[in-house]
Length: 319
Length: 319
Image 1 (cartoon, each protein chain N blue to C red):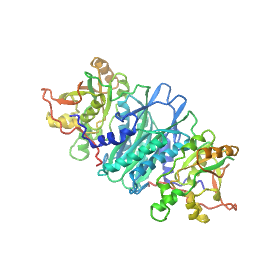
Image 2: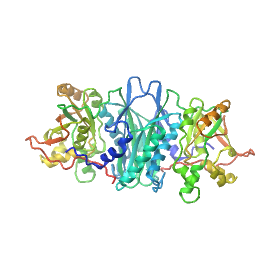
Image 3: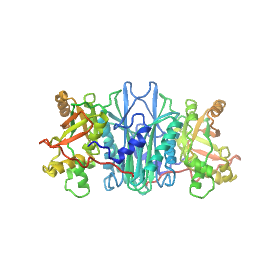
Image 4: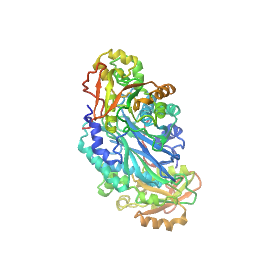
């Protein structure tokens, strides 16, 4: 009478329980917090037809979902520890898909050092709907916030900007750039650098909705403006080939989504130390401008011309 | 240049930031844990076309989403404190819908004493997709688990069983029972009783997928069997009218979903104390059977006949 015949529960037991420390047999998990530490928590969703097309490998989808969340933890200087998964799948998805998805989670759990703490699996009517909520640890009071930048701080980014934008073009078949497609489908959360600059960076966030729009968020949170130099923004070889010196194209790279690099501010005197952190964590960093008094950022080119930005980045619209 | 033109962000600022303590201006939230306490965390999703039809008021949907999560916290004996919201809406949803949804959250936040800690709002291609992850506090090590039942413990349920099943019939227009429809659309998480029986109940869980199936989960987690008496299971006046003494119909009420009552076990000698807790928390409780050695539950009627159960409860199917 207690026979385990239910598909949902057998799927959980087979594919998701092995990803957890406690086999997910309860309604909830009890999580303590090590003395002197705090949990940093954040959540991100991915919807079929909006964030992904549906032809991606389920393992890659799982990894992107986890990584976009880890990117937020990285920005906050938190060391990943646990996550919760909400997975909504249409009936007929198939066990192979679920096995692939769980395998992607397993790979990245190992790489980034966290485990599944709980979740909910449901049917959806038509489209795949995925959410992850992550938890990471920082020393109490030590989370790097968006709001701590000071006028005069230098503004830095990790990696190269606009690869997500080019990767999306590639995914749509409008650009032949396999490296960009790979970057779009599998971002690299900058966990090591994010943890290393905690307590040194005055503000940080990850770049997910376009550099310019995200810089706007950081400016508002810090109550400051910013002065950005177009040519100082680092691009990949594919990015450089694509913009080819054209200002409009350079600006497009600054407003595309899905970069998952870090944007952070730091006093100038720490730059030598920052460069050694960059080396130690094998993460490139570039100074792209400076925080200013006021309440607006501006973008100029190396000649000093103020540029007119018409599109800052991506936003969902509900109305 | 920093103009706040993006719809997603203005919606968050207008409707969701007022539900939080820190205005949701960062990528993440830092959450400490009071000394000697532990967080209990759980998550539940609701999908349009699966968990709801789409004609419900957005306020009621928000409250049900929050309450199904609170029901899990109640079962674990945790006092609600924070929640994260993942809300996926098709474009064109409209601001009125969002305003109503946020208002439902606001009402229940006040009633149950928790605040919004973070979230993610996205577009979906077609259907509404909702998830909440809740956090509540228990004394460290004090969470009521599914796995602690002992042979001989009495099995109790709160409230009345099968109202969710009848409410779903009503929602489908197959039954005229407004009280059941109301119970289905707006469950009552048994927070006060769940907290009061923490440390007294040997095991507990909430009944969301059908009493019999959920009892099976509790049996497996505790490594025990159970002996259940059909006529001891409490039903509402609508439930009694519907089953009218018919055994098949009684059994149907035990395998329908969406009751959100508590199922728990407790040694018999605590029954007087339990009854006073029930009075204090204005929550009815009924003993429906006893935990047994072995690994299977059985359902019998008052005459002692073992009943043959063909359907234990609800499960999502992906394959």
